[in-house]
Structure formats: C-alpha cells, structure tokens
Length: 295
Image (cartoon, rainbow, N blue to C red; front, side, top):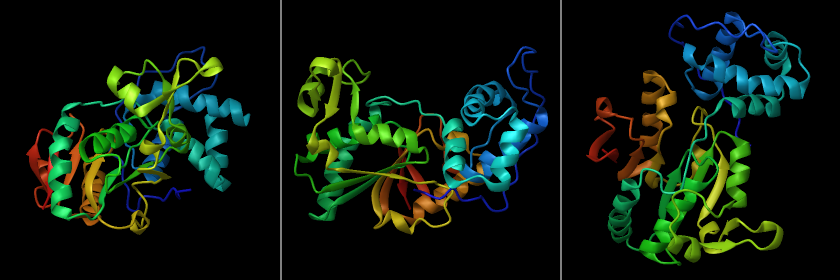
C-alpha cells in the first residue's frame, strides 16, 4: 500500500467564508473542523479544498463518523491525528477524493493516441512502451488505454501500463474489471471485442478480457510521495487528466517536475480539458489539444 506522505512546507491559501450548515444536520461541522480537514487532506494528498466544498466534506466524512462510531468531527480528527492507523488515514483520503470517469472520456485524446503509439513504437525499435495512468479511478481510463493499444499495435503489443490511484477502494474495482453492459463510452464493437458478457446472476455485467488485463499493472500511489523510484523505468506516455485541478499552483508545479523526472525526452503528457501548463514551458511544451511534450 502506498504511504500517505505529508507535503513538506505546505501552506494553504486563506479560506473565504462558507455558507452555514443546516441546523438539523446530524453532526456539527464547525469552521475549525473544516479548516483542520482542509489542512490534513492538503498535507496527505495535495488536495486544496475551498469553502464551497464544505457540504461535500460533510456528506462524505459523516458516513465515516457513523462507521467508526464517533460523535463529532472534532473527536474523529483528534483520534486520527493522535494515533490514526495507516488504514484509517487511507479511509480519510478515500472519502475526500473524487472519481468521476467513463470509458474513452475526452475522446479526442484517444484519436491522437493512435498516431502517438505508432510513432513511439517505431522510435523505441521494439522496446516495450511504458504508459502511466496516474488517476486510474475505477478503471475505465486504464482499460480505454489498453483497448487503444491493442487496436493500434495488436494483441501482442510491446507495451506495459502502470495505472495508479491514491484511492485504494476504486483501485479494487478497477482490478476486478467488471462493469455494467450499458457503461457510457463503449461502442457495440468494442463491447464484443474486448469484454465477456455475464450470464445468469451476472447478466447485465461485462468483464474485461484477459488480453486487456495482462497489459495493466494496478497499484496504489500517492503523487505526494517523497520517492517515485518505485514507478520503475521512465515512461513514454503519461495520462494525468483532471488531477491537477485539485491542486494549488505550487503543488501543480511540484508534480509536473516529478513527472518530468520519470519520463523519457519527447514523452507525451495528456491532461484534462480545463488544465493548462503553459507556465511550465521549461518542462513540457504544448503539442496538441491538452497534450504536452516533455522538453
């Protein structure tokens, strides 16, 4: 399991006033509680929460209070900080991470990836391509990548996908590779080619075929980790989409520097539609629509 490292020298921006919580709420989330939660999730995962996230924090963490039988946020946070186990810190992070995903989300990236895979495979001269998806969530993006690799380079493609996430619960779903047959983003052709249909009690479900699963290594990983050496050899392609939007500017820069350090010269970085890193031209230059090339 990935260790939830603290971010050193982390400093959150001041918090604007938030609307009050409903008077009939089961628990009381005080401004001090919310500020404490903001500080802890920033230290542990680099996530910067603004005042508008107070209701989301209440909804997600209140479930954890019930499960752990704490009577208040203050009591739960006190126990977490004084002697929280690694597993409880992981539960805390899992509660506060967002996992919106779909197969072939932001489809233009996968059209571009076809040409990029061919070019990089030719450049590598038969050496395996290394691809990192660092926000694997429940697996739709990793399997979309694997499908694109197989469709472009063949079932025996010399490629390896390292797919990570800080949230261990969603990674467990990804590793199972089981989804609803009407999952958004899958064409009938891809359903037939890349998935097995469930029968009987599993009717309505699909499972990724072994040739997809064999390309992927799922692992927990925290982008705030002090060491990235466990990721192995440098990558040719990195998908880091809709991750940086949860970080403040200094954290974004720090993560970009670390990604630069684990990629080959000329490697490609795919990011989310609302993410822009033109201020980091010394690391990555814009090469296409939300696609950057390592300098």
